[in-house]
Structure formats: structure tokens, C-alpha cells
Length: 136
Image 1 (cartoon, one colour):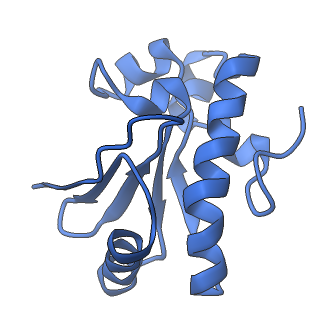
Image 2 (tube, rainbow, N blue to C red):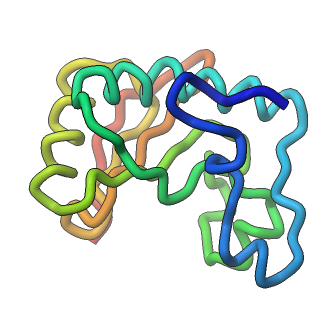
């Protein structure tokens, strides 16, 4: 398969230490891969262009089995390829990412996770809710 977007390889979008430890195949099907490309190009790439520096992907696609292993929500958009958890390395920089996303992008959800430990952003082809949430 091709890269997900200009700055995201498929390998970094699907690699998971938990999947590797547990022998879980975390490869997306073609429909999910198209959703991954959409969220990457509509959300991640404009953010990366604005930020001008690398942004780490903590979690992108998760198969249903991997999602269970990591304790993810049963309705996680990661399982659909519609969500990315990202970090610029620290809380101050992550808050900058969060604020810019809220002010400049269309999205389904953007979540400040655990006082800006990381930022979750999701995007759907139709029906984005523009929800701004906090997980403590």
C-alpha cells in the first residue's frame, strides 16, 4: 500500500507495540485505508504545514482486537481509520496544536487527553460534529 499522506507512512499509522507483542495483524482494509487518507489529508497535513515541525503519531488505526487489548472505547473512531492521536512532545506544544485545530479545521472531535499529554483528532467524510472535548 501507498503512504497515508505526505508526512505519514502506512507503517507509522499501523505500528503498535501492543499489536507486535500479541501477534495482532493491524493492517487496514481498503475502505479503512481511504478513511485514514481522508483524516490525514483534511486534519493532520494542514496542521503539520502550519506547525512546520514533525508531529508524533501516538495511535492511528487500531483493529478491533488491538482496540480491545489497549482498552479503547468500543465505538473508537481509531477502528474505522477516522482518528489520530498526536503529540508535539510536551503539554505546551500540544495545547498549541489543539488550539489551532479548534480555530482552523473541520473535524468530528478534537480531544485534550489528560491535560494535553496528547491530542486526539477525528474526521468523517460526512457529518462532522465539531465536538471539543476533554478527557481527565
